[in-house]
Length: 147
Image (cartoon, rainbow, N blue to C red; front, side, top):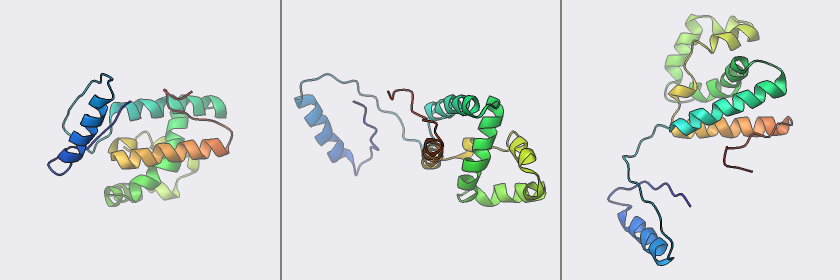
């Protein structure tokens, strides 16, 4: 069992209650406390690259193209709608991105940070969108620890 919990003064009583219940269960657990960060962990980054490989095999394209296509179709809209949207939009407009062919836009994704600028919430949405899209198109994307 793994539980991520945002600990601060206001949530401490709730955490102590949870700890009490776990300890009374008789099982032994490892407890790690680290500073909270809105940034996602490397595991989210690693997971997306596993999926890019699966998408590339399913689509018959190279991994780089599968990743860039994913960033273009699913990541860029999320990024543009968020806090970084105005800055990214300015860059895209200045390179005439919207006048480029799809193939050119896919290649430009090598030059533009997309997923590395995501918050945890945005990255979760990105991965959820990839799962839903590919499920509807016959490819099951699962997390490493899923059967």
